[in-house]
Image (tube, rainbow, N blue to C red; front, side, top):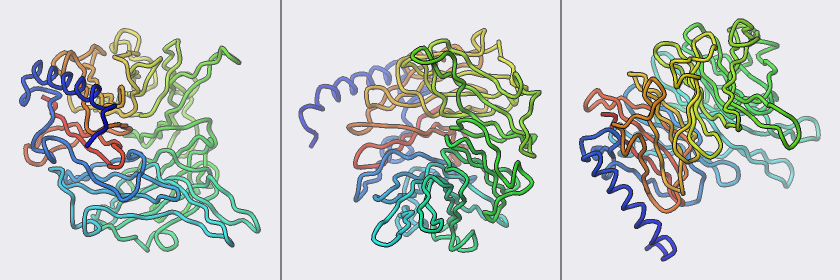
Length: 414
């Protein structure tokens, strides 16, 4: 039973959800919980230990959903759901796989953390790849914040054909984000300022930059475009000292690791909101336009650029838009070009949908916004668009943490 201190907020959240449902005539409206998913539209995966909300999430071609969360001494939890939200018992026996990135030296142990998850096609089979930060031994020293990547088989067992015993460690700076190219090569980036590309087997790709590494500034998100260019999302600093502010930006790197100076302004496109902004996602729509998602000044925010990195003035007139209050983090693009930015507000899930012109989509939830209390304190980092095999239609899936559980929710798009 929840403590009394949660009662008033929960009643208020229930009222807001009910109000949204009324406005949407749920079920049957865009932004409604999809009751065919899990239990009434949500899934709670109980844990034997507390882990943070999933940092990475990906959907398989068959509609199954894979997420990774946790890290450090608590270990990680890989979860795979069937397309309908049930735990996939063919994965790890119960739908979950636990693993720990631990390096022991003498009497001391050092632990790493996975941030990204992706799918790599090996001979027609989908392998699961996770990337993040680890440790390595150099002489008598332990070096931290290095790149660690591990690969798993479809049944959740470690893929021992990858690296050494299923894992690789490179002293190149750790990964906050990962993308896997159509050819199976793995690209990672982190705030250490290194963009790294690995071959399919986990070795450094010598054809990219300097022995697989390109030195850039901060990187927080990745996407690979149709020409093989790597889009690295980060920020650009304006001003100095107490007046300094960070604004969303994206850099394009050519397939050989060279900055594409024809992109944006000398290789970089900047979304200057004027008050500071945080970027968490880079996405590419079907027209090749580049969408940045995150938050600005306490509100959900998004920006869109042309494939060449120029401000897309058809999006709110100046390529930038802010929405309602909240900590926007996840971003997904529907096939019709509508942009969904997700995150949290007052410790509840919140989704915001923008039309292709940057206006709030009034057909989605209550005037473009949906707020949902899943369980106690809800923290959400990731969202994706899933093609539900049951209807061959798009659904919005959010993942989050509702201590001590991992939570998922699925919403309708029409």
